[in-house]
Length: 219
Ligand code: AP5
Image (cartoon, rainbow, N blue to C red; front, side, top):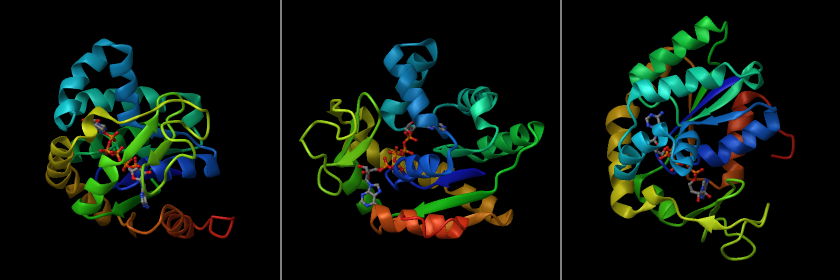
């Protein structure tokens, strides 16, 4: 199964993507995670991407398309993948269609997780992420058992650089202008499903699983 998770920053793409990847046994491909890793390692790609990310702007299409092309050549994507945060522009979606066609694969479904701007702000200003394993928390909605430490691996929790209020507002603007048109793109292909993202993490997961026809397994 090849699945795209669409939705504004903070809608829960990463949270649901991790759960789905585990359940379906296929990788979650997050362009945001790949770019942040490159920034941490100080690679030429990371240095180029950082300036865009810090301002809440999109990294140029050719860079992220190159990342995806390379990632899809890896064996573990043969059975499918969960795309989290890609595509984000119409040219990216068109490029993904071409790459998938070349590989003899196709996108089966696009889940559009809908949340209001107010909810996005609440969520992202409280988000904390584990430096070691990437597990995600929220100081109020999904707190770790021990403050500042990851429940899964004990790693240190940190706040992302782009989760400052002004940058979040810019990311939202960019989303509405450049990514929202993808709803129409996938709606016209008949593979878009809208999900109410303001329900609890478990309820959102349940709705996605029901749509995918894999409900009822202790979701
Ligand atoms: P990226 O990392 O993709 O960030 P994003 O799309 O802005 O999304 P987030 O990761 O912030 O949110 P999410 O939807 O994954 O929500 P999460 O599950 O974490 O991109 C970052 C930057 O990289 C971009 O700005 C851009 O510069 C660059 N980039 C990346 N991809 C690119 C591309 N394709 N093209 C160009 N540039 C690209 O949840 C958020 C919080 O809410 C967490 O604390 C979580 O615990 C909580 N939460 C989740 N679900 C719920 C719920 N149902 N109820 C209550 N709380 C919840």
